[in-house]
Image 1 (spheres, rainbow, N blue to C red):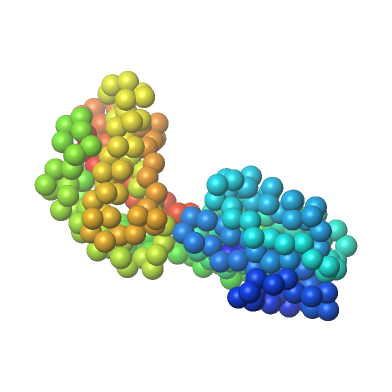
Image 2: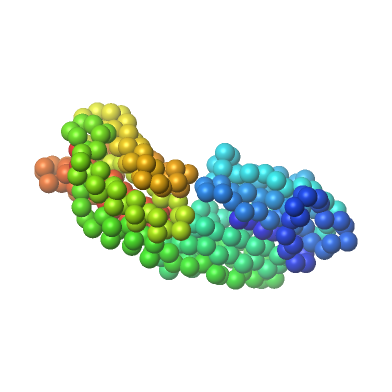
Length: 273
């Protein structure tokens, strides 16, 4: 969610979608984002501000993820508000999951989940560096590692196995994925990345395709167990991110893996080639 107000309090958008009249103080943008989307709604003082905000968000999150419901109204913003607003939308915001940013005049509040304490401090520090001293930021970010730990404990360093050279899960691999489904249901709708990895045997492009196919296979198995497909993102990394040497059978086995990661956090799990 992104909520912005040039001055005065942030007001909820009415069900009718009507623009607040000029007597209501503050340029407003408020929105609630479905999974993996950034929805921006409300009122800003001019077209230039709207364009700048949307351009910045699309650069950060990708054009297809940003939903534009912003209108332009007869409201007054503080001096250079559009400039500071765009500057405040720093790349570190993409490290925040289930986030909400409220900018009300010269005051901002940010909340959501990050992977560790260093990220919690860095996000706000880098935002503050873009502003003048008249701006303040309230840091309500929370370290969400406990949710990642749910996935890590469920996997317990076990191997999700596939048929050799295939994206088809073995019976043992499917059993582990079924147990992961139970863990995913405890994550309160967090978006989870399923990332496939391989060793360096074979052609690079073939490994990339295999890693993506395996991630998709895991996703399909999880969806069959009742996990919302929109909460799962699949990626294939191929052989590009080894965690062990590919010079030994043991190392190659470690590199053939599936990584489950809550967006904005990091955790490794393994599969088999």
